[in-house]
Image 1 (tube, rainbow, N blue to C red):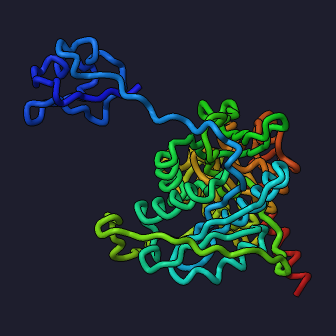
Image 2: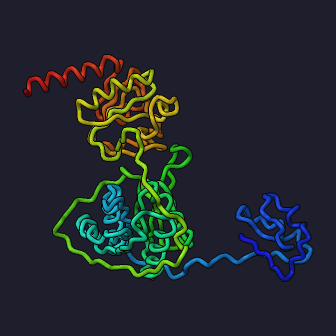
Image 3: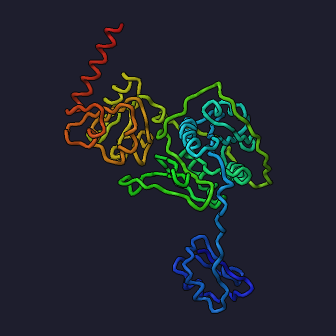
Length: 399
């Protein structure tokens, strides 16, 4: 419930200010003003002796859901390059669209990006909506949310998927608020209800200790952000054809309130866990931050990268960029080597979809062995050097 002040009745008596348990009301120009911290509890309505505060009718939910058709994927691009998570969303979106019996579309924003539409079609999109403008060259919340919301209002998709990237996590909630619909964040699984064809959005809850499936039965579109690395990428088929639709829009002066002045790249060594085919991860079992030097040697031999459990990040042993798990990065490499990682459920949620999991742990009862394809019980400071030595011998023979 929301509340509003009837200015013609308000006397500025200050009673509502004193009664509000959330300090959400203030007096301005002798009138009560409701602030953003208002929870709609209704205490002020009962307290006002002049009946100057009343319940505000909420925006009615859309009743005719049948007018919404199609699955949309936000085609996030940076510097005119489609992000890998988009290929994953198109793969998942294709399955959802086929289950419903509708088309799969992508919506693309940027400057000089129309040529990227062919790539989206080759990865499964039947139709691509394109907003190509200098004002959309770099991402801004105001610019992108306006264009995409107006497109949603015009074309009415029933499902909208975004990657749970920095941009997607900012953009998704803004569009959902504009469209007066719900948003399920950080989904790890999406399904279609066979009975009503609604979107079943599953995500970890309570720190990853259970999985919650969330529905959006009364409003459209049904919106989800999906963690990168969770879904299987769509296959590229350059023979596919599709339709490209150019969007019409107009920005008024001052409508885009922020301006990107400069990009400053980090001085730290970049790590891309999402794209890595081989990851060698360390947990508290490596005993000290220097243990990652050994893991780096193994990763270098295999042409992979190193990763980490949350415990090592919390201990200050390694940067958060290397963290794999529920509160880090979700990965799906060809090979995941877990060294000294016990296998907490939050970590498993971020790597259990790896093609092959190799666990090295001194504790034979560690939970990590339950999901591992290959398990080695032993001291990693003996096992890892032995693996490196064996790889060296193989390379010598190959030469």
